[in-house]
Length: 177
Image (cartoon, rainbow, N blue to C red; front, side, top):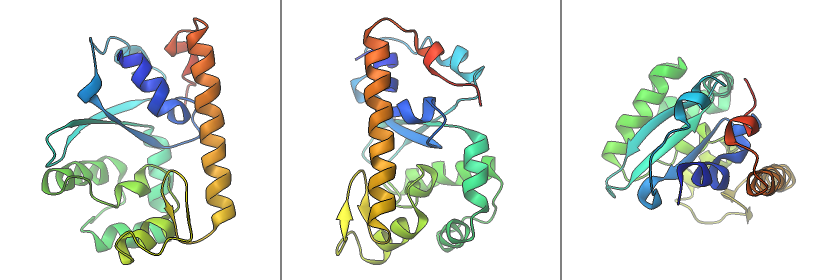
């Protein structure tokens, strides 16, 4: 699969500026990543993560959005419990990268992906069990909010897929943040 297709399939809401970050498994990448530089000009950042599974994962994110998430008291508290000593986004992301080296996928990554902090905390506390609902993640708090957020992200992905299939370049689909 081409890099642009992986981005559209897995990162449309991040390209649109409505989700802070997305994770892409690069195991299925065919070809290069030519569009990265032009996407960086639009405010996207990229970080290669490798968990114990050995599969390369690419975190596609907007630093300004990560910065906002890290200001939320619930997110800040949860991250501190997992060894994050700063709310500076660059340092927190570097700590996340180190956590990926120790675990295949540290659960607090959900904070960076824009999942509600209460759901990430609930997942960790319940060891992935006892969820009241699920969509892109297991829901432990506000089902209506979670399902609305998932629906918004899915609509974005569907629209971006159609635009891209109809010939729109990925750089035109990425909003400037």
